[in-house]
Length: 237
Image 1 (cartoon, one colour):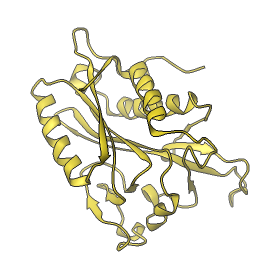
Image 2 (cartoon, rainbow, N blue to C red):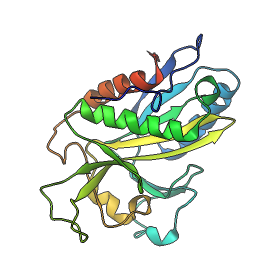
Image 3 (cartoon, rainbow, N blue to C red):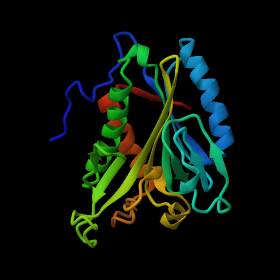
């Protein structure tokens, strides 16, 4: 049973307008994405409508504010971009759905931890719609999937793979950056970094789990999950 209690609710205050829902065509260069987010966040801070922007990027690595240079295993493999979001090294590339979530928490709950929990909940509900159980871990960021078919870990626990990463930034209580969900990326591309600074665990995707889904199918479920947690959306033309 999916939870709907206050812990995950980020519903807007009465009178707020629907969140704009935008899906990019083709691969979006990372620099262009950052410039767009900067403009949108400024407009939202001035009272503009909130936005969720779904993109795919060319292969690249990003370094969050806590990134450790030792976790960049292969610095020459793909371009590396410093970013103001929280977290460590992350990979983005084709086949991975990146959702940039630009929300004004002053219109909702001024609670950063609740916002992060809400993003995790969106991923978990999206996966649930495809009969995949995604889980949180107190000591590890992101959303995880148990892999009983793999060998046990060194400590005797069940193997787990990461399927989604999170990284956020706030400016005047407006959020940007967001989450990435692995649909069908080249998983070998993650080997150039220690993803999010967490070693000893694998990375997976929906296709790797045996679900031959299309990005558009995932987007439909992602939007439905977002609306359950954040409220109404409206498509941008």
